Length: 239
Ligand SMILES: Nc1ncnc2c1ncn2[C@@H]1O[C@H](COP(=O)(O)OP(=O)(O)OP(=O)(O)O)[C@@H](O)[C@H]1O
Ligand SMILES: [Mg+2]
Image 1 (tube, rainbow, N blue to C red):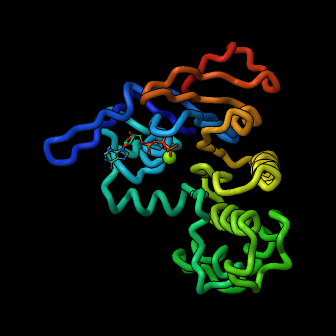
Image 2 (cartoon, rainbow, N blue to C red):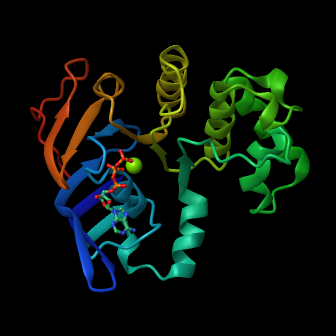
Image 3 (cartoon, rainbow, N blue to C red):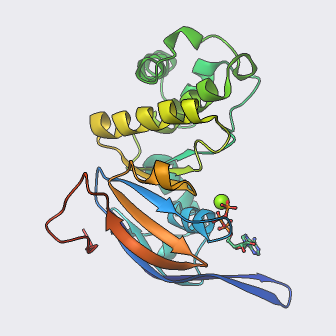
């Protein structure tokens, strides 16, 4: 469902160039939950932004459900993103002037979905992430872990093909981190949504079905965890 082919990326600022990703190749199947692991500066966020169509790579191609993001116009890409891609950020990125439920509904407001349907879907998702009782509060009245639950619910409301999460537990203590990762694992199982989770934490990564490791812009391993044996012996194939 997601395929990265021969992707390289170089940032140019005036005369200065920084090569950040080098010949990256991998594929993720529909319904998989995978980790993109690597230390600070290894290129994880850049890779995620490229896969989400927020930037175009200097070289290579990125396919989501057989659509080549690199070939899409900016207009097409923004429509595609809204329909097929969900995002979870480290800093939640909730709108402080909207209630929890209104935050979750927001992506559907942009799609002109009727208020009663929006409300019903938002409440079902808040139930799923365990905070239906917080629906009418504002983000500032919630703990960090609860705010991240809101942002998870918001990312799911458009039923995207794939959800990208950039360090979703980076701001949380280890107990809350476990809860949030547990929720993501559970949602992946239940809704069959594909998840790509960026982390620098080996322990978080090991709970995912497969781990892709970046080091200095090179992909050094592509493997599955022992819990999810695969007949291909860890090789990654295009879907
Ligand atoms: N807009 C930019 N212009 C120039 N260099 C950039 C730009 N964005 C990122 N970089 C560089 O690309 C490299 C990879 O950055 P990236 O943000 O992808 O790393 P990361 O793995 O997400 O790190 P972290 O764990 O700290 O978030 C870094 O050396 C960074 O300085
Ligand atoms: Mg990053």
